[in-house]
Structures are given as C-alpha cells and as structure tokens.
Image (cartoon, rainbow, N blue to C red):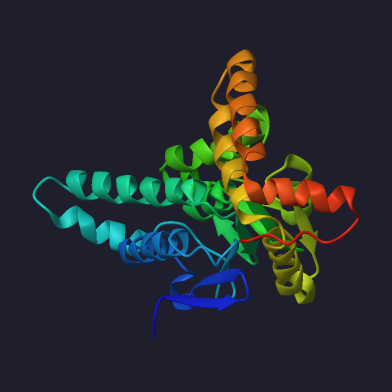
Length: 261
C-alpha cells in the first residue's frame, strides 16, 4: 500500500495521504512522498489544479510523535534528527506555494499541529462540517512554532495566538469566519465541492494563473509601493502573452477563447 495515492482527472491532480492508521501523520516518509509528488505535478503542464486530501477518518494529525520519539535515541538526543525533520517539512510546505498550480486542501475529521499548518499553507481549503482544527502541541509541552508561521499568515494575530497558547480547537464554521478555510460543507458534499473548485480554476488560462500565483505570494512580502511596482511589471508581462491577447479578443467578440495551452 502506498502512503500517498495519486490520480489525475482531466486537468486536476488529486493527492491523497493514505496512512489512515496513523491519521495521515507527517512522518518522514509522508513528507518525502508529498514533496516528490509536488515536484512531479510542477513539471506536468497538463495539470492546472491540485486537490490534497486524507484517507480514513482524518485529514492529518501533524507530525508522527512515535517516530519523533524514536529519533531521540541518537547520541545527540535527536537534535540533528529534529532539525532535519523540520527543515524537510518546511521545504515541502514551501513547495506547495511555489507550485505553478493552485493547491486545494480537502479537509475532514481533524487537522492538527503540522496538519493544520498544511491546511494553512495550501492556497485554498474546503472542509466538512464538524472538522476540527488545532495547533495543540502546547498541550503536550511542544509549542507549535513552525505551524505558527502559516497559521499567523492566514488568520488574525490574536486568534492565532489564542489557538497556539491554549491548544484549543476550532470547528469548520469558525475556520471559515477566520479565513483559514474558504468553504464548509456537509461531509457528503466535500469531494464534489473540492473538485468543482479545482475544475473552475483549471478552466482558466494556466499561464495566467501561474504568473498570478507567484505574484500573489511575492507581493505579500513587500511594502505597498514596491508591491504596486512589481505587480505592474507582472501585468505588463501577462499582457504580452499571446493567449491573453486571444482571451481579450474573445471577450470583445463575445466568443469562447481559443487558447493554445
């Protein structure tokens, strides 16, 4: 049994974490599989959107604590192991946002600690009603410092800090209110909702979405004046794309665009 299932339907790739007995924990093996799959998707121009989900009763319960405990057996008490683990996890998370295609988290059950980080890192997220989100490491004496990076860039500061310091969970409806999740739907509608969102994105001009996703994350790190200068240059480059010319002409002429991509 593979711990990460891959399926491509049309222009949408579906990656499903498949380690239900461990609640799809981000073990070293799962992190490596996810990073490799994301690299493959990045190089596949036929894929225009990605859906990431989890098998079994949960999306992802964060890092594999049993594996982490075993890592303490080395002479340094696990220092090198933990640094490597967190570095590789951060690189995998960064790969999601550097991917040309938008990534949608399809979430159910629970998304805790690094699993909540994974949701916050994805470009979009849909969740089933009743899904619980938490950065609850503090409950066992481990502050969720790396999950904090993505969470604090998704939801307001004080709400993020409350979740981090109390270890308490929020449900899907609250996650929508705070901006961690785009849509909350009944469980029976979750798969269709994620696929519909992915297909709507996949219908757009892939090169425009690619340049737009990159610009979205770049400009977030800039002062406003610099962001406008940068995005103006991006708009110019986008306007020079022959497929954009075709898209504008098609809109004016009230016909479907005939894009080359």
